[in-house]
Length: 231
Image (spheres, one colour):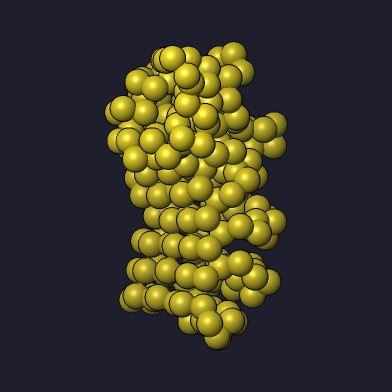
């Protein structure tokens, strides 16, 4: 049997649903190398603790330092066969349920003040892990086009600023239900002012203050802007 060239396999695989692509991983190395980038091109299901565990393996030393105060035992698995996060083009981080599930399953040992419930502590830890993962994605992705984030706070936003400044591939950036505050709005405005690749900015139900209202005038006139319920 004559083997199909990579170009033909790519055209076939791109029309397959994920469950069939997963089966392609097991056929041979050639099929695996084609299927993996497709499976990792869009991350929109952060409910999976297995996905969270795999992503945590890509944190560098500086990113791991942000998690030291929480005494988290990060995964110590062998280096993955692929640099999976380099293939990501779209990220929708709209839930931290997968991170919380990973925390529970790993049974992290930590003492909690009597007036704070364990669930509340896990929520705070999960939010920090989420922002750390976003920083890692911005650092490691090669062709990230679409980034949408929900439920992060000012301190976590500041951690993202440096990598947002360095990114030169984003076309769509979205923030929803976040609590940046006045200072966060100002820092975000600085980043967006110097960005030359963004074509669509979505800001919905965020507490940005007056600086947030000034984001649109700072963008090029041919860029699309959407804002809802500024606080």
